[in-house]
Length: 479
Image (tube, rainbow, N blue to C red; front, top):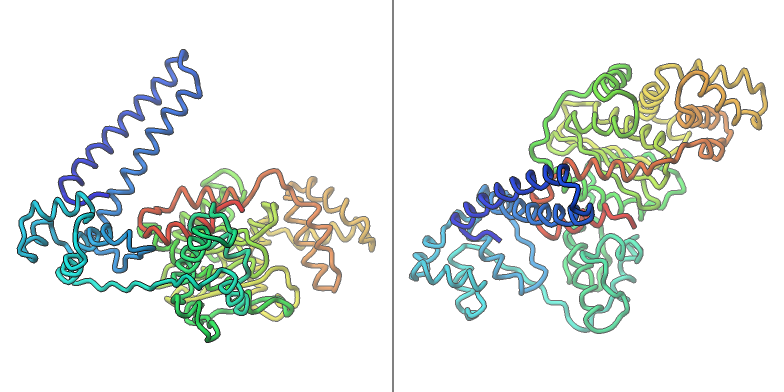
């Protein structure tokens, strides 16, 4: 890590040198055909990795200096030395300033920090924390604690073991067998994430009182969910997704904000005129260009889509297991409609759970959001196209599948989008055609990967502390 201004200047100079070296390497790679492609790739990746690390260090130093960090998370006492250095930088103190507060020479503080306080007594560490004006709260995990006990308590509040192991372990390669160091690491990592996401202390997690969720994290939520949905799991996952949404906003501090069009024709026309065609990838780029980050998740159950506005900043969360790009596109523009509503409100939340026709009949906002998305996908011709399908299929549901394909191809619209629209129309009449519609979806690409890659291109993970960064990366992992 960067500890002082001199190291900061040196690191900035190194970044310039590495950037220049990468540029030269790219030029040479194109001109020199004698070097094996794999060697070119390995050398370029090595330089890129070092450059990325240097940039991350400078951003962390700049964030500390700017006062963007008010809490430093510790996973163990071993991280205390670096936390003290970061606290000094965040307090706006030079090594000389801290030395003067302690009645020491500047060189002594330099030696302390160069060795990360390896030879410093506990009394001196306490004196340092007082000089920096910081508070240290450290909880101790007793040996009697077990993952079995933890998973049992979490299940009671709606968090299953699979979610913990796939999303809440900071280094998921941990051997989950319940013995020795692996068991201890599992507990420390899981409880660290749970504390950060849900606000539960170690005492809460291993105590006797029932765990409770903090409803304030959800804001004023309008749940549009199946009556048979597991409300407990939905609430838990919503708190988790809300935390990820906040991290996303933190990771895009300088994302430009534009007004959101409320007419579907304008949205579709702007996507096509800017990016060439209407597709999930281009729609995602467009939504990001409006200043709305889109976080893609792919866990099972809970909700399918969510929208939050926090302090006037919008964020969309999409969560689907389907590989249908048309379905992802529909959900995206559906949530975009929600984001455009009541722009005068600083806080707003909409959370919904899939294709529930009754909910869409009962909610005026939901009906409008659905029509908005369908209008964009089918170029405003949805009723006309549905009439064609109905006419050519007659009263035969069995013939409808082939008819939808035929009409979509002839009229130059997406087969998947038209199939989804027909399924929705039929669901209003009590007919379940969603299975047939699912079979008509194009699945050549993985829409979640498209959304994830665009997400990673736009966020700056260097703005997050190490624990939050690990939690967000786990949420984006392909498990």
